[in-house]
Image 1 (cartoon, protein in one colour):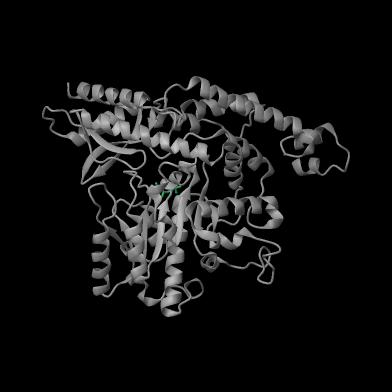
Image 2 (tube, rainbow, N blue to C red):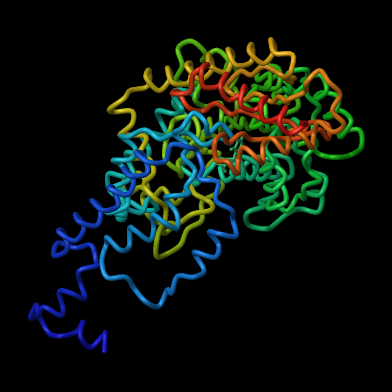
Length: 503
Ligand SMILES: *Cc1c(COP(=O)(O)O)cnc(C)c1O
């Protein structure tokens, strides 16, 4: 019956209008306006009423509420819809903009990017080909070029927006693997698959590097075993001398080093591996150097702290997560290469989309640079709007502000006898634990209890990690609104909870 009604010839009956009102088209502009206004009201309500980073709701409660919805009984209007979404989701959503959210690498987002999201979603360009994106292709390309400039890549750089750092890191290792096999043995892995010696390929990354490197090695058919973990120094940065020894040891064992992954801003400590020393080893052993700057990329924009990324210009490829350190809504990430021809290896021609005979200078197609997405969002518009309205300097000052807050917080932790701080940070991550002078049987269990109980109060969301088998709390300061007053208050609350728990 539905299709029958839709096919009623040209006359715009009222029934037809009802059927069409949910489609975004020139006849539904009022509906669109109403719907987005309601959605915006819900968001404003969230800003006004969510004064804690989390409601403390238990998973079982939300699970039951979501399960109870009858999906076959649609609601009547946007008021009802937004009320339901509010109850099921927004009311309990994590509020990343509050300083008391100090857990993971989630940033508060900037408003120009939110305005861009409205446009991106409605117009719904797809970045794979020019005929689906038009200006979007060139805006993305400008953002890639601009990022390459910030990296110091010269004018031969290129890249592509991706869904996130894990995906960008995958591209880095894929290029490393395929270029190595081609250069060394004339093997075309894209075409012919892995050569028999591929199980001997080795990738070097610090033991503090992101876990996506292991997952990616596995996806690339090399196995997680291919990733050799390099030990770190007292500040949890890759030890370059140990890297050299490990490369030598793998060579001596008949294995085949292909790449080094250096991290600029580790997830757990916010520190930066010694990029110049690592780059020198990569050059010496002719290894691909991928720098994972998913977190540390914010430093690119800082006048005061840019020097911390010295050496990043020597990388073959780099990961940046704009959705971490450029305050962009998820998702927004990019994979950048220093030499644009290296990216050609991922091209695959499909007759219906990007045929081999097409002139891509004339009619560009970003799909030629993308491995894991064909249909792809126009995320670059968010960064464009952010830069055009706020400018690079202001974003850089946000990063400087967070670094200052982290340094002051590190000093506060060091001065407090009830806390143990593991390392200072180049960025904003501090790993520490409550360790009062009096004897506590199990510090790991105690700190875990502190974290959990604060989480279910919803008052402070702090992260955690394990170092040498011991449980530690972790502050990730990724909010320029967070001040030393906030972090001091949180430390006091953590301490008070700790003393309460030991009775
Ligand atoms: C967050 C992070 C990643 C993964 O990025 P996603 O965008 O979450 O996929 C990779 N590397 C580092 C150092 C990170 O901090």
